[in-house]
Image 1 (spheres, rainbow, N blue to C red):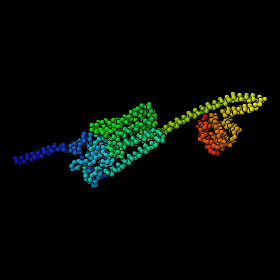
Image 2 (image 1 turned 90 degrees about the vertical axis):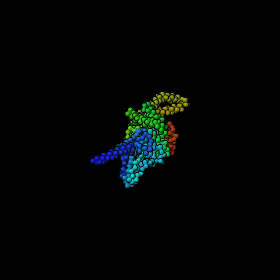
Image 3 (image 1 turned 180 degrees about the vertical axis):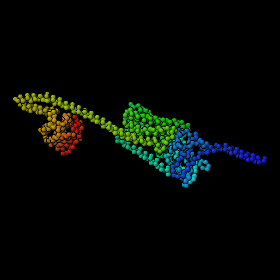
Image 4 (image 1 turned 90 degrees about the horizontal axis):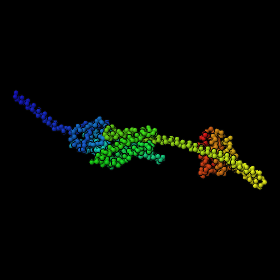
Length: 637
């Protein structure tokens, strides 16, 4: 009995010993267990899309360390799972971030998957792969390295991952964007899907570049054709915006300066400032802001601030170490000024649209509203206040830019259409004013002609009549016959001058009779045989219209008499319900138009025809001259 109890006691003691050993092992292995990397394996078993965020963990450390330290010394609970987020915005990065994920190839073939960060601006990205003896460096990328060193030649940060059939591997990726904004959306693609998406992205941005280039070429051409500076400013704005789009996504690094790592670090900030500066010039011209507009001063102040900040973008490259705070201050300044600039531009457009009722401002509001929302949202993303998916390709800002550039171009066309209508209205007003001025001049001339004709007839005519009577009564003198002849000639010339100044027949008989009398006089005193063809009702013409038309006929007939050397001349005057047509044709030597145009006669004819809103056509050759006038009947009341 005693022996049995002793055996049971020994067995119990053995179990207690084993339990104590187990607990001691457990206690001393807690740190080792907690230092294991989190594992949530993504199994590749088809060609379908891969949801990496469900299997990816993120770790932030204050210092740059080795992958061995991350895998052995960092507790598991320091990592956080990315899911359900698709985008992580860290704001201004104050840590070095590590991404951890495990993938397994469950297919019978070797596969190559492509890890894409969806953030082109990371300074350094190091890819480590697990092995039996720890993690080893597989590849490195980033904008601080020459482009040809990238493991995959892509504008974004891309790492190709090769897995043999049945292989499972854990990957560590260290991201260095210390002191700058960092927003990532890691994705994993199989080769086929990645190549398709890659081709689509390059196709989209190629089309964007083509549209932008065409836009620039068209506006430069319009500038040299129309000499309107808005086209040159708009072309510069499109170039700046296009530069920003490609700089923000890394295309500039790939195609413009692949061997100069200093440029990608500063180009995004330079392009942002340059785009907003050109936008300020465009909005001033597009909205036609005058000096008395209060918003003009705010816009110029924003522009000056951006221009001053542009040279300091170099701190984004050299602002490491002790100067890291300078980089942060500059980043916050750029974001703040960009935010303020967008608000100022929107307020200026609202003021012109609502307060001043300037119609093109509605085009600007329609075009910039979505872009303003996208830029403001993007500022919050850069600051880390939201994880909204705004870093995709193309993102909201880029879509907004495309909408804005197209809408503003349509707005410029609308401005031209509006200005064209305003110009036509102004030209019509000026034309009416000029017409009224000519009318007043013609009326004044006719009044003066009437007064002069009356004075000649009443005063000088009476004197000459007395002279003729006196000369007739002194017939005893030998010179009396000659004196009578000269006096009668002077009296006849006086009557002709008075008749030309103010034909009496206008009052009683109308235009046709005056023209007919004129041609009868010319047939008596000139060597040219004149014929007259009349049609229509001359009584339907207003007095001023008839008098003005007679002045035109008289001037043309005087030119024929003085210069044509013709034997025959035909005058046709046709009056219809809509217009008056005058045709004057002679068989002379032909008018020399280059000399005649300079003469006072033709200029008087053209000015009067213009006043009557008519058209004149002169055809001169060696066989004679034909003049055709077409005048709207109701052009002058």
